[in-house]
Length: 314
Image 1 (cartoon, rainbow, N blue to C red):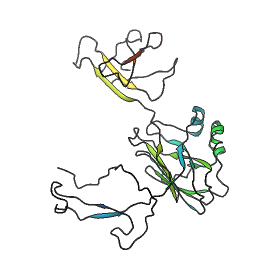
Image 2 (tube, rainbow, N blue to C red; image 1 turned 90 degrees about the horizontal axis):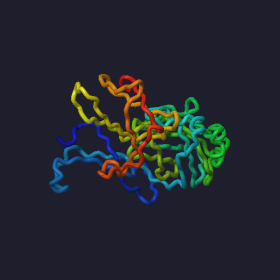
Image 3 (cartoon, one colour; image 1 turned 180 degrees about the vertical axis):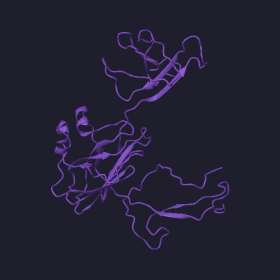
Image 4 (cartoon, rainbow, N blue to C red; image 1 turned 90 degrees about the vertical axis):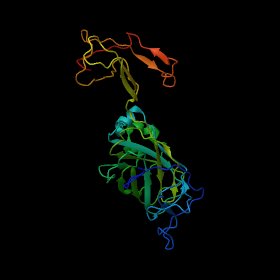
């Protein structure tokens, strides 16, 4: 079977038009707007397009406006102290508070909307302004990041964020008039939940009524990646201890001394335990070479650098 008759969603990659264009109501088009996207399906693409049988009646939907490019927008990097103060938490599925900076190319002279679009998997609250969900004054964001945040201007008096509505990874901020061109602004916004894993298309964008930013980088989630467990033997009830290779890449450096990595096996496995100690060998491998037959080993930790303690299965 090809494509079943069910709700479908996919992502296309392409280039926007080079000239800004506004999508306006238009009575004489198939979708009621000046720019429409058309969907149709064919029974057999091998036949010429002009004669191929169409399965469903064609559907058209309104497109979107193309705006002038905003001079700059970015996710503001923070020190460890500032991250803690603000409430930044980059672990999967955790609530987070992100800080964004932007610079406009034209004044905002009337009340309007700022739109923040994130990668797939991020989730904003429906009312993303409630409980200090959006903060616009640098002095109210973090004392620990005062020097960094001072590079950005304070939002003009009388430019409130009147409302914030979230839907999936998009947040829409209703603001008053008054923000000025070429000034550096910032704000923090609460994310209800991070994605379960780092998105493949991992970028944000930001737009005002008349401008839209280029895509800018997001962040990698703080979690283990490239995690694999393999065994020398998979036989049940073997009389001699089995050897298990554990491979992983931590998202953050594990500090020493004092840092620890805990590996827990499923019920039924028993780790070798001699007075609380377990035999081990730990190597750091070059991810670009490690599994291509060249060894790829960049360093091997000595007994003085790492240790192993075991319970029944961890």
